[in-house]
Image (tube, helix red, strand yellow):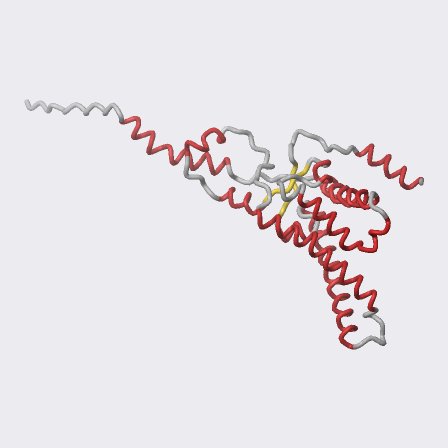
Length: 252
């Protein structure tokens, strides 16, 4: 009778669990981050975004009312100066404009959010505290330096150049029939550009009403999206107060 003696399995090494842990951590980390950084769809009130734009316009009008009437002969320069001040003390320093702040909104760099949703971080230690944090979909960095500068160029410089050009062309009567062909051609080009801009703005408005993103062409071109500053804070300006203001303005 032949007896076969089986060899006992070798005992695991003391640091075997460390090796298994290091092998499994990247897989767990990849799954966790893919869930953590996936883009959460959010819906921002269209009324709040409209109100923010309207409140900023009213703020500029209130500032202009405090100035003496003699300066209104330089209205394009005055408007550009006020817009620059608002930009410098809000957008430039990573703060919302007065109207945006009153409606509990802020600007967010949307391309950075999209890239963050696709990229996986490589440092496990640094991101471990954030893996269990509750996400609302409102996270994301503010505007970049380039976005801030292009915002200033479009809002301040673009509006000033266009307003000055319109004022100069009206003063020189470029649209009159007795003007030189070059002046009439320039006037026609301005009218064509203005028509295209209004058509593009109307198309953007329709897209905004459907998607709730980018209320104007500047925001859409820069991909600067308005999102809630805090999901647990209501708008600072209530509808009741705004309704009273509307009734008061209409009754005067």
